[in-house]
Length: 117
Image (cartoon, helix red, strand yellow):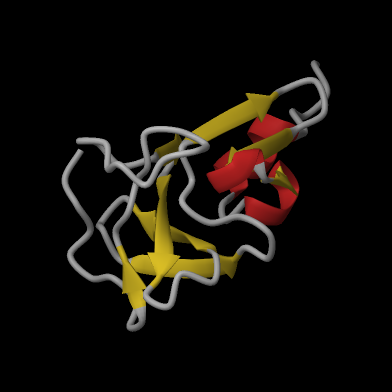
């Protein structure tokens, strides 16, 4: 997957190898969901991680600032509860409901499929 064409101002690309290390990993955490890619970045001042969504054309669509997590090293999807948890430095975590990250009808339908006919 190619890096986004644009990154918001004040943001850097960082991906850690684990909970207790600042060692970089060669790949960056990305959540691909339907027609959007969710990249995990870090504020330049290291206060927290940032989720930035890009559409299929590579245009930045939306940004969510995390409150409790920096240096994300793992992403876990829980389809039973329709959540995604981001794990960062010191094993801190932050969980988002998928409906709060959904940006398209396709994504909404994947969370709440229409009734069978």
